[in-house]
Image 1 (cartoon, rainbow, N blue to C red):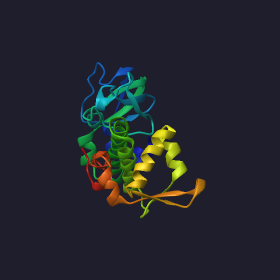
Image 2: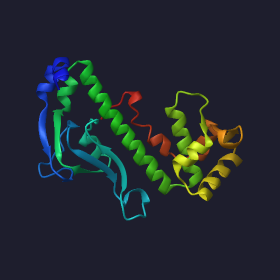
Image 3: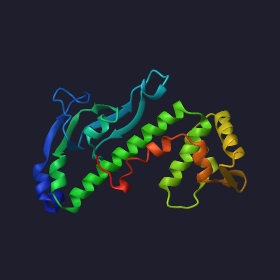
Length: 228
């Protein structure tokens, strides 16, 4: 905290140390204010309810754990239909979002950018988790590939087929069905053979097959300068 005091004393002096008790957020104190939270010793969890987006499982989808390396805005998260809870009780530093915005320092800008980035990634995880349950495997695979293209600096993007298949963790028959559909419609090219083969996506063709989930997940891209 000493280096923060030197970098932006007006921000540090505006921070308040608060107790976070175990249980659903907001707790008894009703912490739904427009603040940024910096967990210190507490651990928070975000999930999607089981009823969201056609989930048929009894459990909710676990999406993120937020701890001492995170900056988060409950206002943003809870307005996105996430469930939030304090998994491990402890403390957090809290500062008003309006105070941070008013301070013209690189540190204040960074805090806002990190909070925005965290929210964007969590929202993206939620959208693509729902996509895997709600849409067909070919639609979801096309959306995942378009999302990968959007987030990559490489053009055209080439992804190792084995890596993507293992990462998605789909059943072999589900993967083969999705891959066969994309290949037959000219959405993908396979560069090379065997374990070293790479997938190259044809974005225009993929857009015609994919569901809209990859577009929704990009709406709050911090690179587009959005906040709130």
